[in-house]
Image (cartoon, rainbow, N blue to C red; front, side):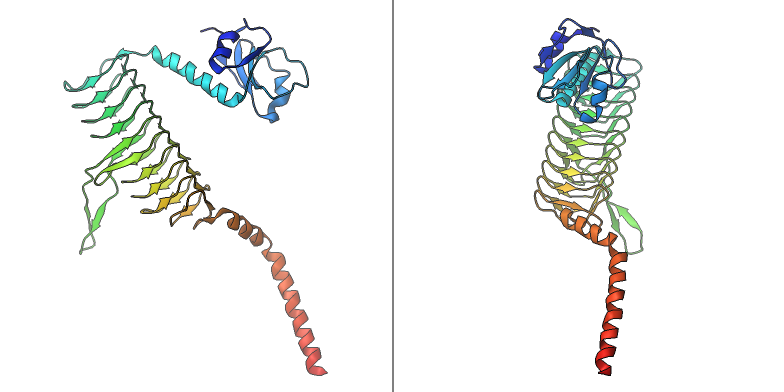
Length: 349
């Protein structure tokens, strides 16, 4: 597919500098882009490549001042990175729109229903009373259990498993290997030391505009729902336990683990490999640094780090002091020696 610079500028509300008729057919990183490709420049560290890249079109911040002439056509926008992300999304939409129909073999229960322009890949399974919205793409080997609902314009990637009764909103992307609605980790200790399984009869509710990375697991609630609110973004390899609620526009990086019944507010940022205990609350806008162990509730807007996690600024001060401990130990010994000498002089006088 060929796209002229003028059309691209319209999509991102940009201003053209150079030849508006030049066309591109793919994307490339600015340091290695070829003729006929579109790239972007947002990070000053890559400025040297701006002047020697072979890219035909470059999206660039409108505030950036060139130090040398460039051969590419420029499209000036307020935020080059966001504009480039918009273009990638549009390009992906165009590619996915070409996917439609039902590949065989696939199993679709007689009571399952689906909307217009859907794609259901080979070896996909749609159970009884499944509902799939318009323009949703379900890739091969996906499993949708009984009574699952998936909204419009969703992408369910290969090998995703969505257990019975779970509900997925509109414009949701779930990446390969993710499991939605597996049993929560609920076992009642018995007098003989064994554990009795507590049935998990709730579900998972994922609201609109959520993206879930690959090989992430979101457990169903014991009773009620595990909820991922609108616009939340979850990375790969995350564990979300039963009855957790994750607020809108919250982002969680890879390998984080969230224990049962924890409430996470909106706009929260959780770093990779962070661990959060159950039955606590993280207030709106809280920040949890990577590898932190959170054992108690966090007030809104507060940043924490460490294990156990505590105030971010205080933790940095503590780390600075820790690095100086050898010098401090030396000074203490010198002071102890000085004190002994002074005491000996005083005793002799």
